Amino acid sequence: MKNLLKKAMRTAGLGVSILAIPLTSGICDQEAEKPAATALKNAYEGAFLIGAALNNGHFTERDAASVEIIKRHFNSITAENVMKPGPLNPERGVYNFEPADQFIAFGEDNDMFIVGHTLVWHSQTPNWFYQDEEGNRNSREAQIERMRSHIKTVAGRYAGRVHGWDVLNEALNEDGSLRPSLWRQIIGDDYIRLAFQFAEEYAPDTELYYNDYNMWRPSKRDGAVAIVKDLQEQGIRIDGVGMQGHWGIDYPDLQQIIDSIDAFAALGVKVHITELDVDVLPREGGPTADIGATQAMGEAMNPWPDGLPVEVEEALAERWGDFFQILYDRRDVIDRVTFWGVHDGQSWKNNFPVRGRTNYPLLFTRQHEPRPAFDTVIAIPQQ
Image (cartoon, rainbow, N blue to C red; front, side):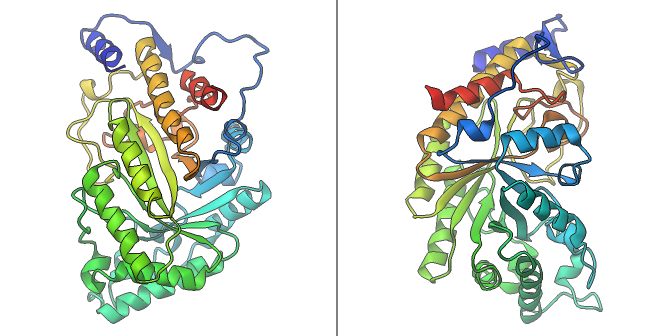
């Protein structure tokens, strides 16, 4: 697979014309009466839930073509942005509940497992969360109250309706140490315990998760294991770990994914693959999902603006198959697999880490059609 990818990239770099799958047509010539694709949720019924992150156009049903995909293929939904602290509570005393209410109603109307994302995060959290009314940094006591009040207001509002909460998001550095977020700076290391404690208090019947990216790295995996063990030793409930699947066509090593799934399952918590997408484009430096780690645009960073070469599409399908084979083999410990978006055109990967690129990270194309990798993924449970 790597050789196929390198060959395609080298050919594109030389400016030689190669057969590509265009953006303006389907992924291939299709018969007029092509039968409907098997639904993802049906193919993996009894194995794990199949989810997608939804934006405003989805849960308001303005984006009809995407909504058709969502209702057919997914039985779980995650709030992509509308339940994060910034969009939900942008100013002191100001709550923007309407989009979150619509998201919840969409999930209920379609009998879906609903995931709230996220209660405590260092990013997309307004500065006023950390300040008093004069703009001074909060005391420890005031910051704890800010956390408690936010969780009570949000988790409490949707108690019994949200089925799982990403209580804490991305609290670790790449080496597995705790990130020096303002939550931690002001409260201390026990801010993690408090977040889960408050979530359990105000959403007692909701599953509670820790969610992070790059947890295939041994160091970061060890950090997450330490968080789970620490909560368990203190008698604080944590039900699952969300392994963000921001993976690539040539990373990570498959064994690293296996080792992390097994390590979290050994703790007795549920394992979720969250935010799944597969990056096919080149990048500088190591993989990350830190939204602040942007890079500059250049022709070499956007090699396929008009469609993927066939060789790369084939390599991508093989990679998707490798990932889902691992997940299906571990279906006894994996509860949910959630894609971060619905189709290529809506993916954040078009703008991260380089703005304006054309990426192909999901199973549905910009034309709302299943890409070749879809058939590979659908076939896994049938083998």
